[in-house]
Image (cartoon, rainbow, N blue to C red; front, side, top):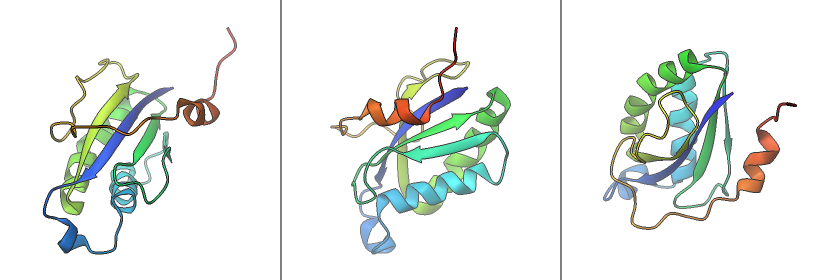
Length: 125
C-alpha cells in the first residue's frame, strides 16, 4: 500500500473569508473531493480537528489511485484556500522534496507516528 503524510495550513489572509471552518475541516473536504468516490483511496487525520496545521495520511491501493488523487487535490485545495505539504511519501516517485502546493510552513507540528502505525496494515514477511 502506498501513502503520503500531508500537513495543511490556511493561506494568509483567507481566515476572514472562511470564517468558522477550521483548517482541518477544509483539508478533509478537499481530500474527500479529490478522492471523488475512487475506490482504493482512504485517509486518516492524525491530529486533532482544531489543529491549525493538521496532519493527514492518505493511503492508496496503487500508483493509479495516487495519480488520480494528485490531479484533483491541487484544485480542491485552491477552492478552500488551504496549502498542503508532503512530509512523507512512500509512492513510486519517492519523496517529492517536501512540496505539493506551496512552500512549507516555518515550523511543522510533531507527527505522532504511533497513530499512523495503528491504521497502516502490516504484511507478514
